[in-house]
Image 1 (cartoon, helix red, strand yellow):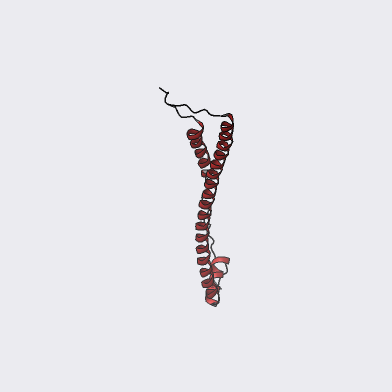
Image 2 (cartoon, one colour; image 1 turned 90 degrees about the vertical axis):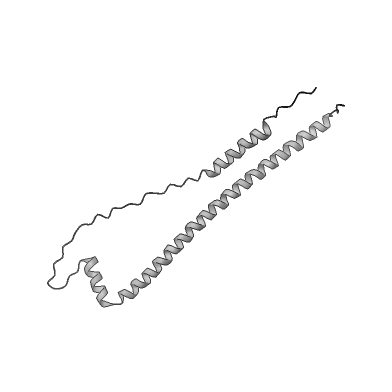
Length: 139
């Protein structure tokens, strides 16, 4: 086996282009992960906005029905008696306290998946590229 002599110029060229290619690969990986995470976030936001839109459309329909009901004088009179404690002649009003203190638990969103993905890719890059592979000794 003939050993090839590696010149100083080729070592310098390899160092420059090798470093440049590693930087470009790392940049491509990070931008792919970043835009993938943003895409995932936008899809989740779209789903939540669609559910919010459906809720608002249901509310709109309920309000339209309520408008139709409020055009009826009997419904308005009953509504006023129930909600504003108005009474007919000869009626007594007894107010009962209602405990409607039901609070919804606050939602805590965990958006750290982006950072976990970036750290994972960095660890993989370190393991694959930076840590030198063991070479077999030449015979």
